[in-house]
Length: 336
Image 1 (cartoon, rainbow, N blue to C red):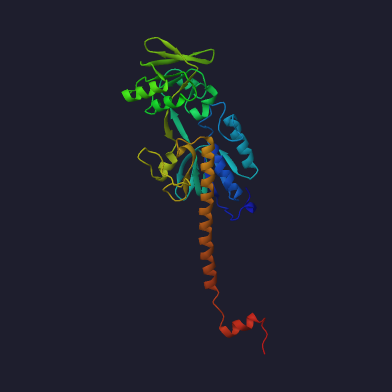
Image 2: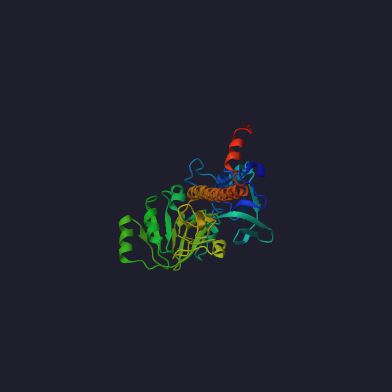
């Protein structure tokens, strides 16, 4: 974006560097570019939802492949002159200097971190290979597409029982596999009341044939036919950059942000899954839009303070004329 499109020129760098080019990062960049800010987006090219063939629940984009959404977003940003830089950010210095791995440092006045999270999957053969296809996580993202199919839920996370109870809404044939979980009597009662079958025993692997999930094999050798399997992965934020800047975390280890995404470090915002594990694509985009407005407002306040200071200096450098002479000047220099 050229300086002629900016309210305030910034020859030494960018107004904002956005780290991450998923729905959150691109949305933040779009709003900031429309505010006539000079923006760069750094894209490491590893979106969390890359294994998924489609996304749901995004108004006007329901069923769209995630990669297609990002492509459209990049095209829109290009129309505003946003610099999209392929690379990975190694670290960020206070100030800010955004250092690219093996590359230059990008000076910025503000930083938006939208680096997402990673899903840590259980070490069960077949899970990683089918992840995002017929091994799934979010019922609201994928439940409709597998509705009425025989569904399995793996007990690999403390939230797994709740997961199974929720999925009963999409299918009458739900089997919960506790695997290594201890399931309480109360939980078993809730599952039974909901019509969810419980099959105990260690899960050995997922059975795949002809590139389709066929069932869940237990350690004792039996196979329970299933068309889809849900599990709750351990979600870990990609927050190394935030940690390096000293951003505060909550008791669960997640970045602490205010409603606009502002972190505890002035000038740094965090949006999307790096700050909210529950954020879906549309939620992450909305978070980023709100954050971008807050970022721009903070820049405006900084600029107003600078302009006021400069105005005061200019006034101090031009002492007031004596009163009679000031009156003459006001009358166009005419006397008598």
